[in-house]
Image 1 (cartoon, rainbow, N blue to C red):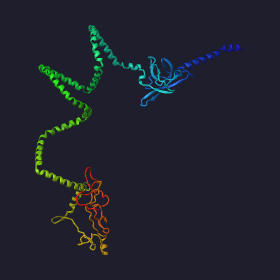
Image 2 (spheres, one colour):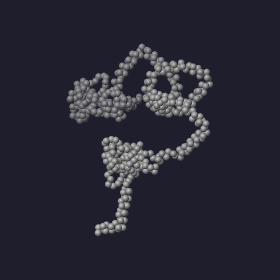
Image 3 (spheres, rainbow, N blue to C red):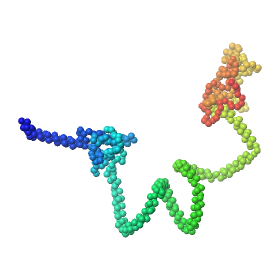
Image 4 (cartoon, rainbow, N blue to C red):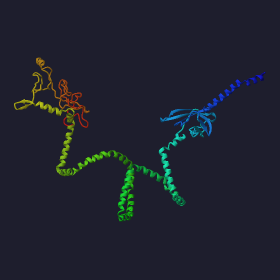
Amino acid sequence: MRSGSARSALGNPVLVGAITILVVFVAVFLAYNANQGLPFVPTTQLKVLAPNATKLVKGNEVREGGFRIGAVAGLEPARLPSGEAAAEITLQIDQTAAPLPRDTSVAIRPRSALGLRYVEILRGREKRTLPDGSTVKISRRALSPEFEDFFAMFRPQTRRDIQANLTEFGAAFAGRGDDLNATIASLPRLFRDLEPVMKTLSDPQTGLARFIDELEDAARATAPVSRQFAQGFSDAADTFEAVSRDPQALRDTISKSPDTLRVGTESLRAQRPFLRNLAAISPLVRSTAAELRRSLPPVNAALAAGTPALRQTPPFNEDLRKSFVTLRSFSEEPSTGSALRAFTDTVDTLNPMIRYLGPHVTVCNYWNSWWTNLSDHISEQDTTGTIQRIQVKNAPRNQKNTLDSFGAPEPANGEPTDPVDREANGDPVNLHAQAYGRAIDEQGNADCETGQRGYPQRLAKTAPPNYDIAIDPRTPGNQGPTFTGRARVPEGETFTAEPETGFKVTP
């Protein structure tokens, strides 16, 4: 019964067809996903950070030694720490090929001329390995060149130039067959003579490499002045043409050249210290020359403006010579020394006074104010012209010790004794004699006291306390500038707040 039922199941065409379709579907699925790696096959992941993906696509092979060990699982844009764009390539590598040493390198190679690529793993030798998910960074040298980049060199103009070269060289060789045969026949003798020359050139003691480096430096140094050199050769041709007109002079020059060279050799030995010092200052001269390029235009303009002035210099120099002659005669006079010493003493005397009086003019403007007020003070008209305006005011009659009291034993300090006079004259009139008002304080700020310090009741530190008088030369606090004055001493002016010479009142 069982064998019969099994036979009947295999003989069912519908069931056989379904199984066939299922097998085919599985085969197609496996073939489609083969580029992504077979299912249920253990893999490890490796990320590669490359300057660009060079046409890699998802599913490209990963090979080692020509054998497939994985596939490209993903491509993502990335950015390097320097800010440049890059490509992050994710590789799925079979577990059988893992682990990879830490010094393993990666390269991207072409698989065909049609642009297909694959990733090549170059296994290192280090004992330490890369963990799963590690990132390997590669440079542009690990990327294969593109065929289109190579063929892009042959642009239409380049192709036409290559064709022209082939045509010209072909015609040149075709028309000189005999010369080529003679050249080939003489080449063995040339090579025989060339061998010792090449040995000498290749000898390290010859210094050919250094000579070529120095030629490169010389060419780089002369490149900016190539036009001047070309003009120099043109001028040299004119010079040689002129020399050739007089062969005897040339022969005389050549005959005297050995003695000249001998003297020049001795001179160069003496010049060596100077040349060493010149080489030491060359960097400074280089920077000065660079600065000179920018400064030459204004210097040229100054010279152009100064040329007319120089024409007037001779008569000026003549007058100056006379002045110097007079000055020399003055300096030789016996009295000049004593006069200069006296002048020095005068300056030493005036300088402290000017340091004290200067701020009264520059800060408080008292000099101009004095003359302005003076013109108004003497402008009263009379029959013969102008007179001084003045009005005399006496102190109250009954005030003790007034200014017009003869034989007063006390300073002007008191008030009227008669109540009627006190009511008529008001507050007592006391002595106010604040001489030598300040112009500035010790820091140079304006303290223009004269005309601005009010009418204090008492300002006398050294007087007895019963005297209501104002005699101290300094009023507390800064009174500030006058209407036309400054806030402080002008920049650069020396000053002193107190007189440096003469008698001083000791507090």
